[in-house]
Length: 495
Ligand code: ADP
Image (cartoon, rainbow, N blue to C red; front, side):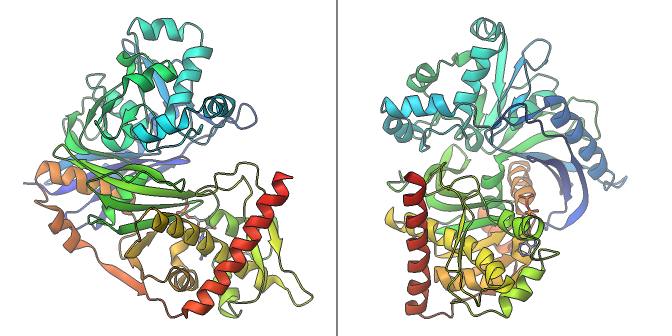
């Protein structure tokens, strides 16, 4: 049996495809950026044809790594989550551009539902909060604002999907309208307890059930690829939203295992096992993955600005020329220099969910220089992670360790301070393409390339582990300072 796996990773700014060997090593990759559209303040859109064409191009690129004697075992799809598409079931034609997860156009509607006290109902069923981030209000916006859309939807002519579903539909020549449980769990329409679309939520958001895809396990036979491309004839056998795929790629299969991805923003996801834990501290409850009909749940916290704070120090303040310089500055600076930078450029994410907060730098003295401000920028990402850890702890779950990935994790100083502040070990894997790897693993499980989760766990290799060395007194004192400045900042913004 052939043991190569192709992962399609359709992201927010670029589409990628990676051809993996069975041991997780990378044989070939393809990547293509595509345009972002900002038609109004707070609106973000993608052209569905760009999503499709860039995905096809990267499949062709990665498939060049296939040798004559090779054949693929399966294909997997991982994707930017929540982004909402609607298309005609007969022609495949989208009715409008995709509304991207970052788009805030439905914030007034979400606020109205919150005022009407609907959040407890929504949270108890979906694990999520009433925020424009998730798909349901975006889908409703399309039905209400695109001419004829609601009427056509009610006649069963239109299909809804997140990016995974749209790509599967196109790849299978319109034969399969399907998603997986992780992607479904980000729509606000999926009941994570019953593992089915929820009538009461469909009514609340005004969505006809006929528009929704069938929900499969994350490892399943999603369908045969019919589109004219290099992988025609193979089957899509794995599917998961990007953060869920990263959790899987980091092989966080036991409760308490967590991963954190540090790119532009940061997403901390912790496996909580077979029972969903509904957060009382504004974390999200979501699917980790679903295998053989059995759901595994997770708690998730997202930080809007992580690596973007370092970009701002580089491009906005011009304090550094390249991101790597931040490590040199921090290495030369004592940790308790007294400066706190709160990068709340677009509000604060979990656990604050404060869209109106704005950033600030506290604790400046005549001795403050570039080094302290840059160090404070790196530390801010660690303090925000600590906020998430604290919130998860209050919900009764403490990460036993943290596996990290994303662009920032090349920075060793950052990971040591993170470990010190969290008081847990931080582990960087050898293969940091964890998102694509995770969905390759899912597809490989379904295709029989891998036999068990244990087999995958054994394949995880540590590049470097960082262990906490800071005293509890120092850790508590530094973190107390952060809590104090965030409180001040929220107070000031609120006035
Ligand atoms: P995304 O997938 O969100 O585009 P990446 O995972 O590619 O992001 O990570 C890029 C981010 O990592 C950038 O925001 C950049 O500022 C940050 N970054 C890259 N190198 C370093 C470094 N040495 N130290 C700190 N941050 C870094």
